[in-house]
Amino acid sequence: MNATHTRIRLALVVLVLATAALPLFVSDFNIERVAAEVLMLSILAMSFIFLTSLVGMVSLAQTAIAAAAGYSVAYGTAVRHWPVALTIVVAMLFGCAVGAAFGLVATRTSGIYFLVITLAMGLVVNKFALQNRGITNGSTGINSVRGPNVAGLNLDNGFHRFYVLLFVAIVVYAGLQAISRSHFGSTLVAIRDNPTRMRSLGYAVQLHRVAAFLIAAFIASISGIFGVWFRGRIDPTSASLSQAINLLVICVLGGLNRLEGAFVGAAVFVLLRTYASDVTDRFNTLIGLALLVVALLAPNGISGVARRVAEIERNRRNDRNSRLSTPVS
Amino acid sequence: MNRFLEVTTNGLTLAAFYFLVAVGFSLIFGLLRVVNLAHGAMYLLGGYIGFSVNERTGNFALAAIGAGVFVAITGVAAHHLLLRRVQGQELREAVVTIALGVIVGDQLLAYYGGEVRAVLPPRWLRGAVSLGEIHIAKYGLLLTGLACLVGIALWWMIRFTRLGIVIRSGIDDREMVGALGINVPLVFAVVFALGSFMIGAVGWFGAPRFATGPGLDGVRMLDALTVVVIGGLGSLPGAAVGAVVVALAGEYGLVYVSNYAPLVTLGVLIIVLASRPQGLLGRRERLA
Image (tube, rainbow over all chains, first blue to last red):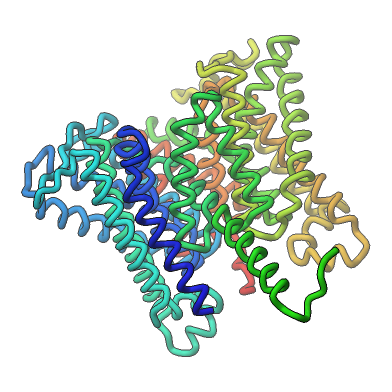
């Protein structure tokens, strides 16, 4: 088991290094637009998968929480001209506050009701942004938001942004892994599997759920802030139903029960969307078919398939090494 | 006061429409436990098929039947070939129906194009009826009548027919019904066909009042979901109550809150879900 862990860790390091070296091999467009968006969506997808895998809650509010944080950044930067640090702090606080409010109400429900209530909450953000003039500027949204320039890093520069995003994505991944391995993480899994028993054991079930939701909101806010810097603007569609569905698609494609799925799903989604248009106009049909195939044949997503293949490979090797096995003719 | 009455009557005709949109969704969930997130796409499919039939035959009623039958066949085929394979796994079922909805919506866009289509109701249903100072659109009255008819017919079917008995017992204990020698897959197919037929036909009946176009699938999906979740998933009276609540909240919001009207309905939904997660008339799920 230890050898496997070492190998997985090694694979991760190689993968990170390969990603960091990407600019050597692919075009500027692929780095500044495609790879950066993959990383940004991966962070958002990790907040989603964290909730599905550890807490068993499918939240369709993650895009809306990201949008809430994004709106704060856009408002602070382009309208109020606040200092960078203040803008970021306000955006993170606002994203988390929205997340906490949503979480307090939504965690009282479960299953399909949780999905519906988070969807409704997400749409509240969408409709509010659409109707409000003073702060969110209606359907136009807030435009020409410049990325900050801190410590020699210019977030308006595509390459700087790519590396910052890569770093943040790794930190988020490591952080969420650490949380899921911690006592708190085990408690969440136990609550997911048997809330009644955990309640009678004296655990504050509701509080744990809200805390998990808050962590996910924190991660979503990070992604939302980068989203505004990435696009330079934000409008109500960022909290729309189709965005929420897109995130669900990414996570289902990648695999809902492992954090790595976030990266796989985001990469597949963004690459398809960017390059499928050369082949077909029907991107949605393509995505729908992919989703259908994954849902029917690979419930753990593409990352689940990869894992399964690796397992089969390992079993075969073990069989070959084991003296008990009979050679297959 | 007159304005209030007019808003209320308008809201009630809208409620009738919402009930028609939501009832198939609720019926399918009640028995099959499938949250059919392709419901909105089926509405849109019905609307477009209705246009095609109407163009060729010029018959309004025939268009509704054609739309219903087409959607019913599509729905049953999708259920039999795809949905059945992931039966009982809530999230996978939801994902399969989302995927189907996305594909149908995109193919409709490809086939029928992006422009919004409108149709006039039959000649005898145009204009309004006046009761004193209140004016009600005749077409709204037709929808109300239709909703009452469908509601009563479904209630009668569920209450008094053999199929209804099977459906009711199926909601309570699916395995037991199967063990008693009833062909459960067949009953499932019948219920799915019935629900699909209704949403397909309603897709066409909605066309004269709300123009049909891309994106309407998402709107109707949300309508059905809001109505049914407020009223209680799988409950027939719940769908009626939910429809009235959603429609009146929307109409009053439009008149008295104007700008933030969409937030009123969502607010009601959140309050109901937070205080009574099973919906106003829903039954509390057994803890599995």
